[in-house]
Structure formats: C-alpha cells, structure tokens
Length: 285
Image (cartoon, rainbow, N blue to C red):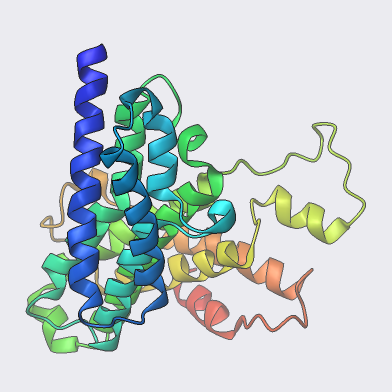
C-alpha cells in the first residue's frame, strides 16, 4: 500500500514537471497571457514543494494545489492551460488537419484530475476530492469543447458527407459530457424539509438548474441533439452499436422544454432567448 502511494506521488511529480515544460513552451507564443501566467505561478509553487523534499503523505494537499490556482482556488491550473489551447483552436476555426488530435489531447488533459483523484484516494468519491464546482467545470469544459467543434463542423457540409460517423460520435461524446455536468449536483427536492421563500429559486433548484452555465448547457445539448437527428441514418449501423446510441430526439426534447419553461417563466425579461430552442423543438417533437 505504501509503495503504491509512493508510486502515485512520483507519477504526480512527473506530471507536474511535464506540465511546466508545456506551459513554458506555450508562453513563448504569448508571454503576457493571463491564464498561462497563472498556471506558471502555481507550477512553480508545486515544483518548489518537491525540490524541498515534500512527503508523499501530503499527496491529497498536492493534488488540491495541482488543480487549484490563485486566491480561493477560483481558477484551476489544468483549466488555465487547456483554456489557452482551446481558444487557439477556436481562433483558427478548428483546422481540419490537426483538430482531431488536439481535441483528444485536450479531452485527456481535462479528464486527468478525475483520474488522479481516483488513484490518490481510491476510498473517497472523486467529487469529495475535487469539489462539486470543479467536477462540474471539467465536464462542462469537455462538453463545450466538443460543442464548439461540432458547431464548426456543422457548417462544413462536404466534410460531414464524408465523415458523418465521426461527426455523430463527437456529438454523442459531447452530449454525454454535458449531461454528466447537469447530473453532478442532485436537484433539490422541495418536499425534503427544504423551505425556500423565493418561488423562482425553488423552481430552478428543483429542476437542477444552479447557474447560467447550467442553462447554457441545456441549450448546447438541445442543439447537438438536433444536429444528430438531422444527420443520423437510422438504417446504418456504423456508429457503434445501436443500443449504445443516445436517444437524441427524446433527450433534446426533454432538455429544451425545461430550458424554455425556465426562460419564459422565472427568467422572463432576463435576456434569455428561446426562439432557437422553440424552432428546434418544432422539429424534434
């Protein structure tokens, strides 16, 4: 057990120094980028910890520092580095030659905190190690990345004709990540002794809507389900096994109905537009 723990400590140390090299390389492209500067600062702190002979018994603390950056832990080192790389892909409009590889690399990087948490504390739940907000953010970032990629691909009609299965796989993976984001926190059951004097807040919490990002996630899911329904060929069996496919029409309809009810109910007049959601619903239903 002690050897396993020590080995995990060496793995985390190795990864910290690898990330430092990567961060330094990216900073040669844009030295004054705030996200890369933040990431570099926390990596310096972690390298110093190991150089001073940090003990493996403090791995949980090191993991928290590894995922946290800045005062109050509001930003995350992995999130900062990948955010810079994502923005670069978006600015370049997802080049066809390199985007598939870079996206898979980013998805792997954004999965890493969960993997490390599971290895370093196998008896604890991942969400207790990382916290609900960070876990939500990791799912959101992976799903949003695939949404942005699919949004770009959706405009490349000729590419989709030749790569429809790849397009549908990206949609399915993105929808799964976004749905996981919505499921990190349990919706508040109003009959469980919970007393909320604000009926609008009560409505949101009972539907599992905890922030603007949750609402945006619902719209992203709806759009991706629409794209899937539009291009999915139900007679073909090339996209994995049929039983593994998501029911895009049902998921999109359910999520967008909830989105419209929230935006035209408690959030009416707050700037949330439902025209696109209603148009998609008219096709899905």
